[in-house]
Length: 88
Image 1 (cartoon, rainbow, N blue to C red):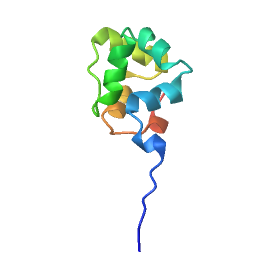
Image 2 (tube, helix red, strand yellow):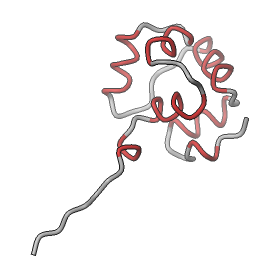
Image 3 (cartoon, rainbow, N blue to C red):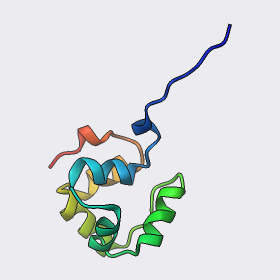
């Protein structure tokens, strides 16, 4: 008897990708530019299985772009809440 476990792709997505897809309509490249980083940096963030390090300016841009407050954003990026729980 063999068992298989099915995991939805969205469960494996990096929080930044979940946030980008849920809160804005930008491509990865445009999203990276809008928060003031290069696409290579954004790709490295996605490849690392941990929250990105954001400068205060990047944090402000990300909050504005995704229409969330900093506390909610940080709670989401650290896994304390899910994207659906973010307040606008």
